[in-house]
Image (cartoon, rainbow, N blue to C red; front, top):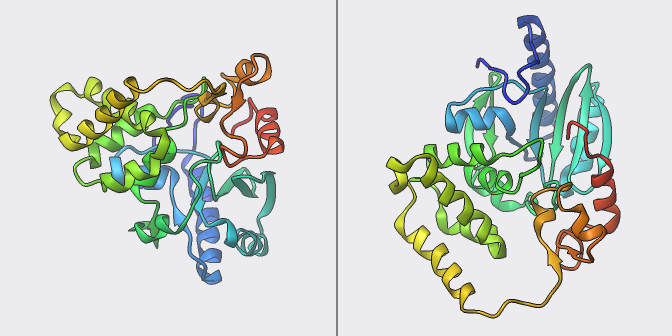
Length: 275
């Protein structure tokens, strides 16, 4: 499939560079197929399948359960990739030349951990001439919904997923995925109605009624006096004053979240890097 550059318009990729990258990704897919453990393809390839929006990135995203991480990395290392484990709470990288296969088993905020539902609801597809399973669109939307950094905001991706697939989503499962963070989902479906005012009916009425009903109930419930900042779930950088200076508890950190203090420190120290 063809690509256009997205988010980084200064990047120029020649046909030979693209061909070389795809050859590397095929080698990775072949190594994972030979291993025999389940994996999913996400990122630009799955997004293009779901929305029709194509773009070039210099990495290739595969998703695995954390329990399968070590054999997956071993198979990629045996296929000639060098392994980097910079962010142990969610991501490892397999590098060959200037291209990467990102091996993902959670999300940067520790929330969207890969579990059996990802595989149960995976979508069959073809990528680079290989038959694969793609990350389910519900899980793609779930994980993208929390990316609201200064340098990267995935709200448009979420809106485009809704435009393409809202009428076929398993909304009950999607709402369950968001759990107590349902306000984030509500914010995106409200934004969808703003972006596409003539297509608001793509979102089922009962979904809006359910989420707005929760909001109305919240408004009638006294606010907690707990000093917690959930903004860190949306941005690792923009809410640092809250947790470092103003005494708010970081919602990513145990026991409320899924990250340790070391995880958040490592993730914060990498601000400004590509990932």
